[in-house]
Image (cartoon, rainbow, N blue to C red):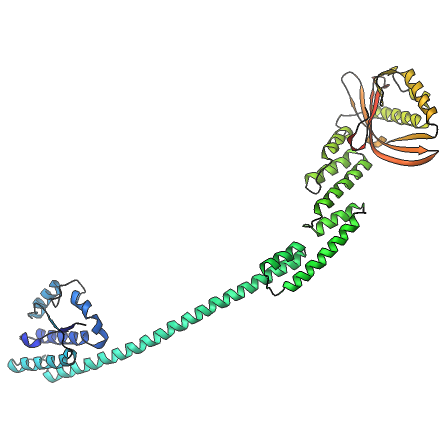
Length: 437
């Protein structure tokens, strides 16, 4: 590395005043500071920047132009115009001695008197003290650098350890949270999710064991549902095993059971409850359209009067009672002279209908059907031409030799009456939506 050699002998400083002496002290102190070991490697930087103000300067100049003018004006010293560079390895060792000799020579040739003039021996002592100070600072700086490096190394090690430990603790915490969530849900899918996430997890064996227990219990519950008609049991199964592979089968079975319950009640309210369950997603709603149609048949939307309703109920009750007992002559008393529809028959007279009923009775002497109307659920509507359209839920009991062989609910009887409340037509809607034409 190139060293800066300032040949003091080639430049004669004329210390004619106290200001010049102060500048000499400042000048020599500065160069001792520059050529100390601590700043030796910064010489190249000093070549291109002014050591006093830090501004750019040429490599040959000692100071920048502004500082050079200021020194000449304020300290009355002629500053050298340029520096010479040599690869002299002994420059640093001899620099202090050269500076001291220069000062002694100048002081001897031009002695300075005055109250504020500093003696030469004090100047030499000052330079030696300053050199010791620079060496002490260099040693202290190296020691401080070592301490600072150790401090940074410790901080790095602690940071790396903290990161690894945090990752480990975070993973353990996440595993614990997922395991507790699986335990809380207590479902097959919850345990499977934990096992997939942590195949080598702490609770893997426990999750596998609990999952097997749940699957065996689920399969056993499904086998019991196959022969059950308890709606509550089906609902409990769906709630306990929301992700069961039997879920679709259970929902279809539950839908059928609730539809059968609605048919058994055979009221507007029961069909409304079925539709609400389907709308909420509890049921697939396989019978939704039929439930909607039956609800419209039995829902009383037309304003009624108590007198008309009582008369209609009485006629309906007496008609079905006579029909069940085989009192067909009584039946014809409620019929209009001309009937447009009588169950599965078309238009016919009242007398022909009576003959047909009597003939049917003689052929099936050991078989009869009893009609049970639900009078509380009777619904009617009065048309503009003074006719009454009546819908009534029915239950049929099939008898064989005076024994009840089968009871079927879910029928709806449709009766149309004229203004005198004589039956013009009567037919039924069978359960499950099939109608008798």
